[in-house]
Image 1: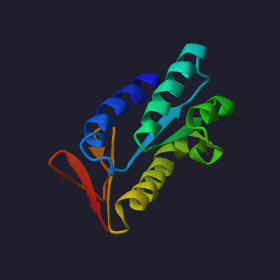
Image 2: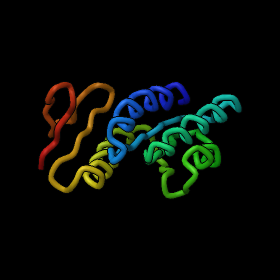
Image 3: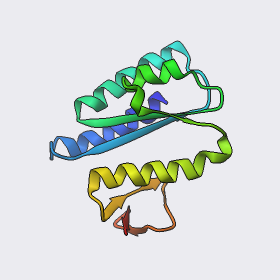
Image 4: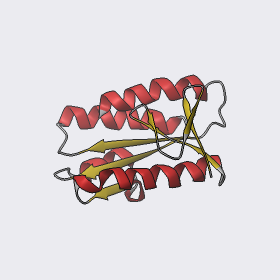
Length: 132
């Protein structure tokens, strides 16, 4: 998790320091408890993200420890439970779509997960653009 958050920090900082009004969201997903060092590093990376006005969310699947994820996001409203791993994709599609609409406006949002655009999106210059 901390490696993914570190990568998000690298990518977001390139945009944020050019445009401090840029909005960003990060979703971290885990399916098990975090080691103490992983939790510490993830909390530090999440804090750096929040300093760049990034909303950090966590998704817990299966055997995760809710209290650990709440420590990372610092808000219970930014912690989501995915009841079963089979529900994961539909849940993520809904969450990403709704969150991006909030940030980007009602008609256009961007969503790219695992390097793949969602079915209702098209790739424009390496970014998934979704227009309703």
